Image 1 (tube, rainbow over the protein chains, first blue to last red):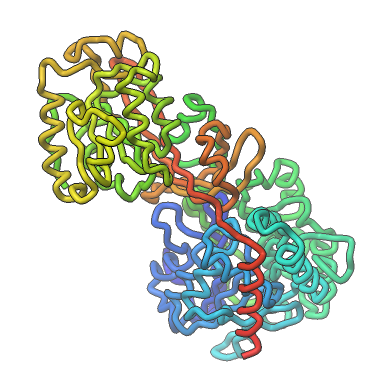
Image 2 (image 1 turned 30 degrees about the vertical axis):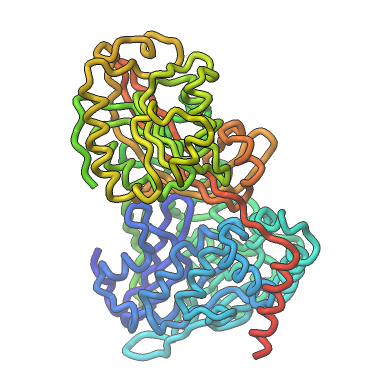
Length: 359
Length: 264
């Protein structure tokens, strides 16, 4: 892969089947990393591998690392990302800026498995950032500009805005954490943490380029009927930015619960380009999801088609030999790369790598 | 570690509840073509002995806190209490004290090697070297043990060789437990590029393991493919750690600590 030109935007979406990481080039050799997953073969964070393959100096050319929420498919390897980008600010959803979350991390540290692996990556991030009882990150709520580049060198101002989580979603997460820690049977804590809903607190982002172009990154934000949470709240703020996006990272792996008509109608151009990551753990997107997304976009690409080129592991033979039931979560990495000049009249061009393909 | 290659691959059953004590040796032995089935409970060992042929049984004395577990199993085996299991199996045994073995009336003479813990480690190199050579070269060596089958009762030299066709090591965590089964997230240890959600029947665990494991338990799974004559088979050994032990006091302490840290 070649480095994008200084006046070129890039939205690279990576996924191995269960997992997601996005790398943004905002022009002028300035990069942002959103979420993390690992290359199944090397176990290294794909974002770092990719940037290093482009000879990007992660310590000086990455301006921001953002973890949209603490689901493991979005933060695997985030501690290694932090180590590879020393000094780079790290932001994460404000939903976990609570004593209760700090306590859960400490429990995971002392009794590995206490959070059923859900917080292991956040614990590694805390350790990568120097330990202590709090993670040294900045906390993101909706209506926050998390990163910006000034106009200059022929490029317009570029701003990255958080559309979520809403105040209500942050409060709801605190209540869930309190319930798990104070009300439940301690023996059931790992299961309770594992089952805790987190998508409503993920950070959807809108990248605004100048006054009239934008990219929407939907994270795992879901749609609810509440106007002060989920996509309805995010759309309300997104409209204030007075710009519509022509490229979208489809929310929540294309699943139906991430779909919001208002998002598609009010934050996006008609028939935008799209990128999508699957979530093999729950077998999404389903065929009906893909049909819906095909109808809403002019061209959408998914990072992983479910296939692989490697020999089938012996493990799969246990299905017949020992009655083990298996579902493959990660097989091979895919990469969807959208690029276009920052010039308002430029159009997007896609390149695919690994298992990525058109939907 | 180095072990001389035996004349033919040996089928070994290794009872050990601490995989750290085994894996270096297991890899070395398997690299040399031997088949090593690792089990971490007496129940699993008994089950395998009754259903599969083995040439050599390697026993730890202390299994999951039961200081006599290994000796009890060996005693049952020597006394013929394990049904169809061939009693002429070769044994290696390691123990805290040979006196312990004598105290439980085990016939030390019938054991090919009875090592003390102090002898386990580097000297085991030599023990394996000597022992494997003896077992594999001795023309009067007993038939492989196992169930009453052609394989188990065949003369040693006529037993079809069991060839290792490779193995995989997977690590992971228990993510769900139900009445009849439990689910595990598995990653391949050597980074070959796969991860799975696997569901195992609860019967894969011994009764003791079932009481101790739970969501959050770490998992080590070794999958081995082998060939006995013309038949190819795949088997696995599953080691599950006890679940995290949380109580209200630990949770309260973590909360208080976090609260104090924020206040400062």
